[in-house]
Length: 204
Figure 1 (cartoon, helix red, strand yellow):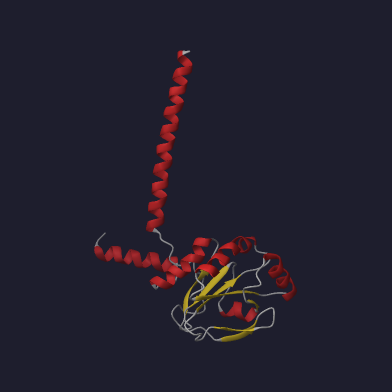
Figure 2: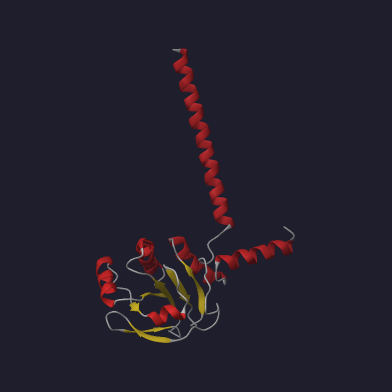
């Protein structure tokens, strides 16, 4: 009997210790998130420079409507979301794209982009309920922004300048593009570099 009581006591002690460990880990994750705040998705080699005007392209969507990429557009920014029907990560990111469309609609227009066969993309639009987004199929657009991996996003500000660009594998990556625009940094690399320089100058 005493053995069972001792076992129960040890079990409860173990659970309490485990609980404290989980709390400590959660706090450390929070500290890490604060130290490495989202500030732009991971940037690849970009043929266009952040802060410079992007080429103005007049293209057509899958349904034949004209769409202007870049240039002055009445004070609104554009998010180009490059994806593919064959990309599983792209598909998993679609709820985040829809969420951003609703949350940022006051200042942002979202355009989906890809290349390949138009029929495949038209079926993708129908299957995933993407009809509310302009959908552009253009190799020229992808080459202009040096898109080599997917999903990839490009944020063009209201002045037609490149604000941020990079791989966006998660919702946090997507939202970090907006943070990058607000903070005036283009990527996680630039954010960490600037933070390191500030610490070095302050003697931390």
